[in-house]
Length: 86
Image (cartoon, rainbow, N blue to C red; front, side, top):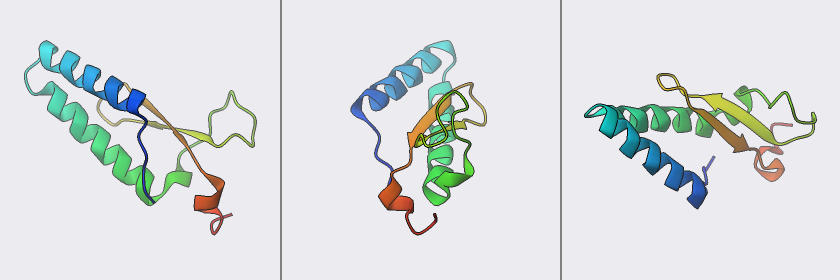
């Protein structure tokens, strides 16, 4: 599966990286590594992540926590991409 990251999300990722590097040298790189690992998992098996509990059952949105950092990643499953899995 191909991941598409919105421009707004890319901006937030860069802001988080810069902030973390100001806090501790190299921390921004660790954040990007953690995020890349999570993206790889999402790309392989996006349906393994839980749906958001606060949204209706038919909502295409799922959540994925990063391993090291306290960031939450929201993703939207496009039905056409998963039609063979349904």
